[in-house]
Length: 238
Image 1: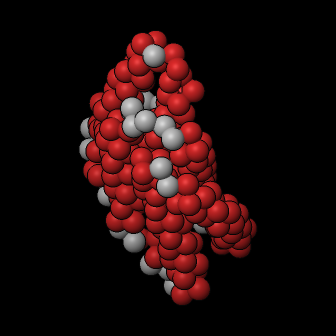
Image 2 (image 1 turned 45 degrees about the vertical axis):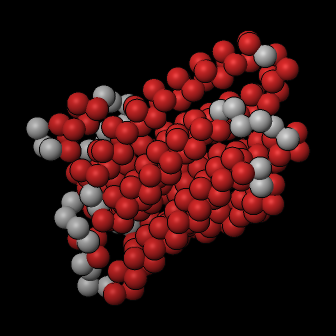
């Protein structure tokens, strides 16, 4: 699919509808990016007010999800899109769902931040939270950027990065389990950190999902549930 081919219609109104729903999705993406970043900082800094802001923002994200779904449904019903247009609308609908779920994960991290702040928790595990948090925030940003620019190569790089995040997550969990075994008094606090790490790992998974939808949109091939080598082959047309 060539860039912006979906916008070359005789009907200017149809063009506007496609551009508007895409713009709304990217606006939602920016909101969700900020949620995740703020949730991470709230946890590390023990800022319960920031954590509450994250949870409050989730209502706006949920509202946008419903609105974007309605826009997609109207386009499908009125325009009966085909080929690249149909892939665009379907991709927007799929990405919309993943973004809402990223917002949910940010809310979970915020909840752990509030609990840890109330307990006056030590910083064990926070280095891992920050490091993995930086990586998944970057993944999410690049996934959304690849969608905005219809860049399948960048989307492929996001999918590759997910493997590295998974390795770091598994290493961090092992470290936290060891810490709990050495000091059982820290089990409750450590579990809160573990749940936050789990949410970050899930954000990475959703970023990869978005990247896969971008590849589907650009090259017209479904790359879900396949290995990275085969995914790369489909992106490169091998």
